[in-house]
Length: 223
Image (cartoon, rainbow, N blue to C red; front, side, top):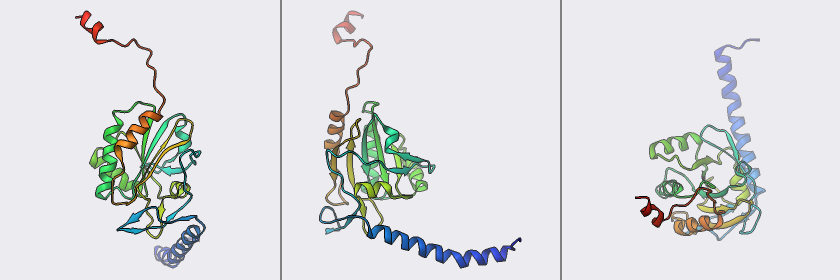
């Protein structure tokens, strides 16, 4: 049976509110089952509640599934053998988040190839793609947790009643162990860039280059 355009529109108008209500109810039910953590992070000088499971230094890093700018799924296990620095921001369209993402993009060029930097937020992939193009962010992977909220749940970073991720830095070594963690005490503040960058350089295995290293003395002799 073929439906007219009017009939299709009426059906859409009838079912859409029910779908939205169902999705909202499912989200509320999901949030109610998550672990809640208090007194760790402030927004506007008031503590917020974080949803999900907190991870600590020394823990095996939980796997997670996020999406890239094309909605292609990306998992932590895809980066096996790499040292991974994860920069977590609430939203790329805010000042501190923008500066944080651009700072790590600039630093990525100075790091060895066995270090991968991820930025993860709950921004939609469309918005992330636009931000990266405008700001020339092309040396790090910018990923979205907006589809499944799997990363936020597994790392205890979802801000209750806001739907955003709290600002944080994690470093996971090549064996998949959490070696560094910073939950920024106030989401309006910057993370400690120098500490994170020094830590990731110390945590990553030293890359051995087989080519002969030319010393200043040898270089002078060849002139």
